[in-house]
Image: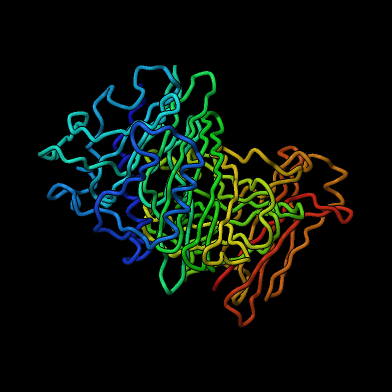
Length: 519
């Protein structure tokens, strides 16, 4: 049996989904609609399944114009359901796919309604044969909502996955566009991923791809993983995605993707993650809120293709900020929550300290490009205003085929850690004079317990543009901690890129701390 998601978590997820859709702009908030139900003859009920058939279906889709989704067949009033009423629609106990079969996973199809009106077809693969999951209103508890009448097949809006035999837990949700989220055991849902992101943050408007269908392989309890095949589509591209979900104390999602471009794509993003950050000690924006910090993540962690470990605190800026970290064949990147002390948030409801970090490990060479970080001004918790992804330098040509793969780790801390001191806390405030700003960065790590190393450690700090003043180091070897303080004078400029690294004998003692400060 699956452990039910509590009402607050469900509402939060629904609100986050609505906020993400709205961030894409009104033109992209829903995929094109109006056509009849979509079927793929080679992948319907009773057909023998082969993963190559999903790739073939994507290739065939890309050779013709986009076929709009049929989102106008919802029962009256369902598209306008309030979030709390929609959250009350759940499957009846024992009605989930593979319930009672002790397979290590159950799948709960999600009803359409609220902002999730687009239909998604769901199939299982049983002993190599495709089996369609048909819509059956008798399997749902509608709470305070009047059940739909008639026998129409409404399909679904996505699915929720629970994992585990003895202590099952909600591990992943796929719903809306190509959005999905996962977590490790003991965590609360937070950051969200997208299989594909197109033109985010551009004035011409974001294009929002969507999943048409999922095929879920029946799991074996001995394997401990769940394989999901997805068919995605959009105005300019179609694609096949294979995801292997391996839940646990770290939940891994291996993603293999093949894209077929209908049109030239000059701004495409892979390995996309988004999360909420409103305020904290590293942010200049102040909210009239009883909590000292509000954020699902604290920063961005990267390991460049050259091996440099980088950490960049995220901010809630006054104006839209887009940062590009140019690289070639990156080793990893992700949005991370480094603050695990409940006292830092003092929020007994949201429990931001329990939100997952999400680490992306490219598999194979990704070539030249950049890690993109978009920071969107926000005053609303449901808004996922921090967005991160890899943008390849080379555009995707019309008619081209592109394949890549990566591994996501939904975790407490990334499985790959540098053998260096980490920047665990960052603070800023008014400086000693004029427009100066004062920064405090705390580094922790085993190296900082070495008295001889500490004695030779220096802080290398740059500000471009700007001047650095009053640099001080406070070592606390008994706590394996070093605190670095400095001031930045921007002169007449309103933006400065900051860089800090601890070094000894010309070698790094810490990861590289970066920050963008805007006045």
